[in-house]
Image (cartoon, rainbow, N blue to C red):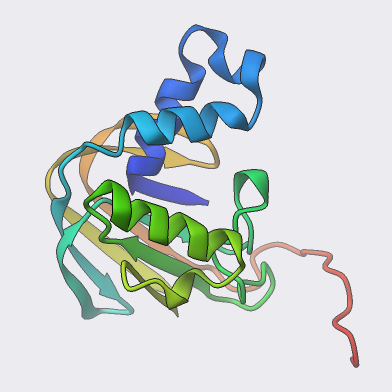
Length: 166
């Protein structure tokens, strides 16, 4: 997983003062709630070279696994071995928007939220109107206004469980 915006702020704040060590996954709930008041920023995102999103967003998340911390579904159809990455953009702006967004993710289908847009692709180019923290595999990184991500299919061997009926 990688992301820019809210998720990076959550990760940064969970690491402060040993909060994550004391509270475990609950630290992310606490720090997420603390950061909900941040204003969305303009993001322009290209997927496979074509503009896919150009609007205000709270965060963009990229991954190839279905669940994030605490069993929250991020990308229900994501697979680590399919040669594509999933991207989701969250446009939630108010506490009520976030409540609706998180509840959809808890029941397993975040794409049904009106505040989430999702797609897949082999390359993503994310530009933000102002510098934002980003995170890579759960580690906070410096601020940036530009992130490029590209898949290298079959670059590593990944063992995954067989699908039912295969």
